[in-house]
Length: 348
Image (cartoon, rainbow, N blue to C red; front, side, top):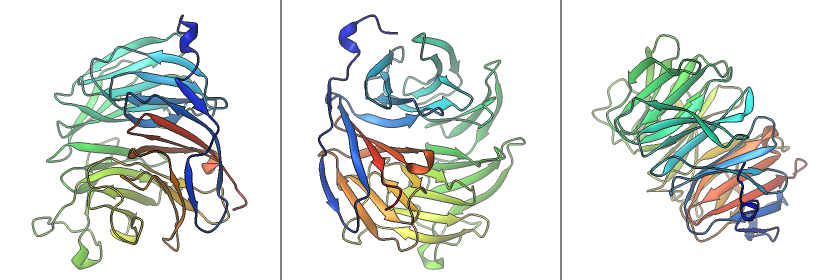
């Protein structure tokens, strides 16, 4: 734990809600806001036990807070450049992994405030990290266009996948830990068998064919994929791309089944930032929450594709979005150093 009592509290914490635009219903209440205005908060994650949240930033610092109150529990320092992503070990909320522009992947003990292991393999920025649900394997994706599969116990590489022809932005796993989903700035999503490393299929958006995946991508304009996520049942992929749209894929049928656009029905969610997404299934109608470049935190009705709520967190881009307990708690982070914790009204 940090020995400096002045670091036990966030730089600024308030329960006053930011500017909001309620479109159809009262969806949430703001629990509190944490502000670290000197840095961009690239992502935020909630621990499996729901007691903590971790943020990582452009200055290389990882902060862990009590989710209930926003009190700072720990600062993890060691990365020499910005940290792009973090993930909690699913079977132990005290263990955190981080990926950084300093080319390393690091494993941390939160309670001890100590780096347990440094993993080196990538030759360029590490952009994304993800544990399997059983916690025995770790994935890291990089701007070097590869995905590395690590044995967590030994810290050794099990396999390196030459996955894409441009930087990898995001990786996700099906709930049964059998399939890796990757997104890249080459505009492709690829599905790999975790055990063998075999590429099962490639998905690319083709507006001329209504989003049907195609084996040949030479005739398709590929917008960079900035983020991928899977539905709770593992049947659908949610992709964000830098044409400013979010798409819901039935990946077994190789088709886009829904497209979510920005405010004003224009594809303006983000054209330059990685803006994360998550599913909110605790409400009467399932929702998708996403960050955006200039419109704040957005909530869509999954079926109607309508924006049902918009929260203007700050003047910055909302980059990180995550949820807990089927979305009863949603947390977002932004490029101006703001972290906002929301309690979702599950009767909405």
